[in-house]
Image (cartoon, rainbow, N blue to C red; front, side):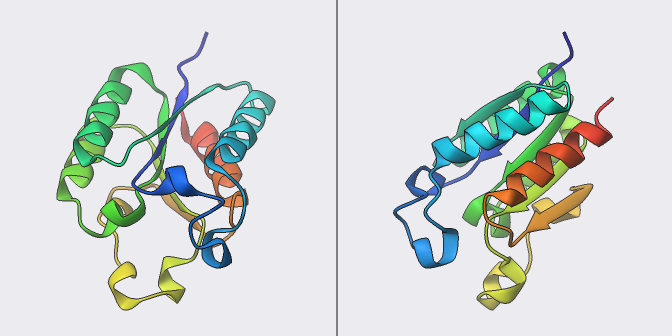
Amino acid sequence: MSKPIYVLNGPNLNLLGVREPEIYGKTTLEDVQALCEVRAKSLGKTVVFLQSNHEGQLVDWIQEARTKACAIVINPAAYGHTSIALFDALKAADLPVIECHLSNPAARESFRHHTYVSLVAAGIVTGLGAKSYELAVEAAAALAT
């Protein structure tokens, strides 16, 4: 069986559906996971879907993905704007990386306009709500070896 796509989720994404639904929508993280699994299956892939509020845990999963995954989809959430550790881990993973966001960071506060993850990502999907994840999985599958 081929290696899975790791779909990693950063801080506060466990609160999807209840946290600022006017920005992030009412879809829960469990709903997003189901969408990713269905899209991956339609492409002959599987996903490992994980969420943490802890930067170090995300780094550990990125390092794990280096040998166990074919690609990484990551919604780094706030860590995208602050974490050089995520940038370094993703760069070292030597895998296709797709960054995704439910909202469009470029249309929000100025501190959200730059992400360190985007510097290592092959592509970025933003602003499409849960559909961002589906398209990110599709892109990751297309780039995976």
